[in-house]
Amino acid sequence: MRISEDEFALDVIDGEPAIITQSSVLGQPGSEWEGSPVFRKTYLLELISRSLEHEVIKPEDIQSLIRTAKKP
Image 1 (tube, rainbow, N blue to C red):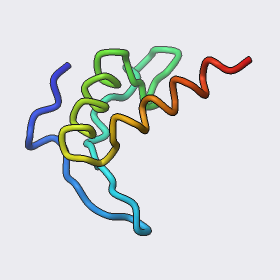
Image 2: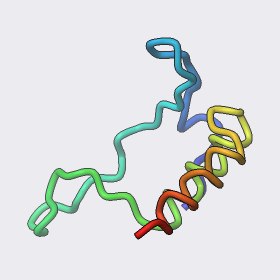
Image 3: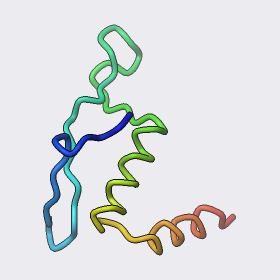
């Protein structure tokens, strides 16, 4: 899923850079996840990509998360 330029906005919230997206990724009616936000892998990777592109997050932030996730 590609997040197009008109599907997000950039802002600073409480002093932190933020990326704001549309809440169009909701569980389908009748499904177990109806109405809940659903973030598939492709969407999350695209969100990370856009966040890096617009310097909402930095590559070192990702590296820090990877190191933290690998700790027992």
